[in-house]
Image 1 (cartoon, rainbow, N blue to C red):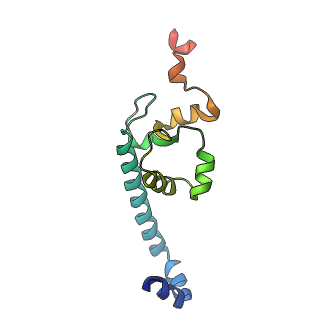
Image 2: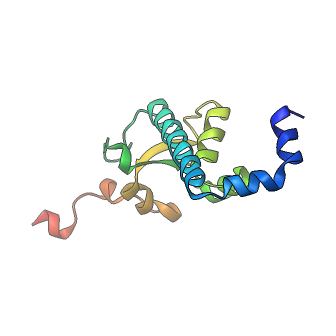
Length: 128
């Protein structure tokens, strides 16, 4: 057991009181957000930093897609979305067969095995 863990166990009540302070909680949230952003950027770089369907490149719109449609099972296995998924992908060695980058529009459009509208061609409104 590490010293930090031993210290926490010996001083659990004091630690809970300290960590419940608003400034401390906010600081921990900031650290977690930066860590998540770095992990996401690393995953995006590994997979080409653009939507494989429509070519969107703005990071705010991009997300990891489970190419085999097993995202729900994977999230429950690794313990959530976001950082746990990024950590699992990195640990697996950035498998190109299992994951791809899609923008949120393409990701939501392809749920339940449906084809992305970008692949179907123009709609009636766009054709006119």
